[in-house]
Length: 91
Image 1 (cartoon, rainbow, N blue to C red):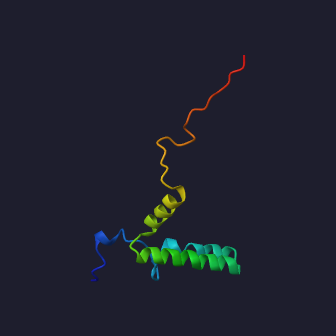
Image 2: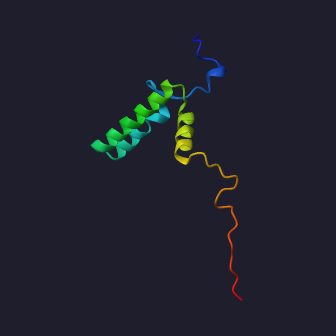
Image 3: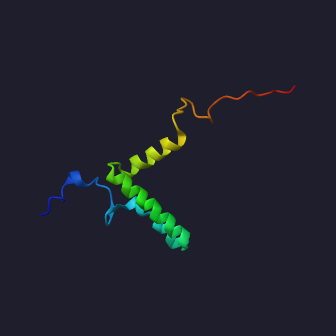
């Protein structure tokens, strides 16, 4: 019996060859829209996630790091859709 067949290993991420399976998702876009530029974008996205994984980030952590890099340091306590706006009641 293999050492990998244990209950604690049931939460391991799905792998597609050496990649996280979710990082290979751009290839589904290539299958649906087969063009040279979509293939190039898929390769670039996969290379970015491979580099992030080599640096010790998981797929989820890499997505969170990308999101925080795009958004910046601004972290509002109340999301913009829940803020109250001034209303003018015409009589």
